Length: 71
Image 1 (cartoon, rainbow, N blue to C red):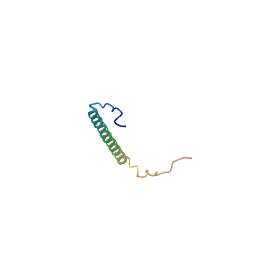
Image 2: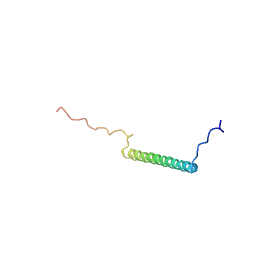
Image 3: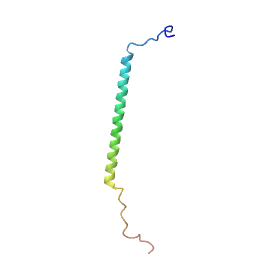
Image 4: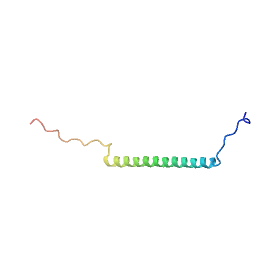
């Protein structure tokens, strides 16, 4: 069965093109990985600075006098 069918023509530079495509895919994946980590670290830094400045865990200041009204 394999002997009777003609074999398809394979381009002579197929391996070179496949290797170049693989290098591009690896480069894109590496850049996406680094960008993702960079954004994650920037967000973590921004949240840390915000939390240090505003201290959201502390209770609001108590009111010392009741509102004046009805005099």
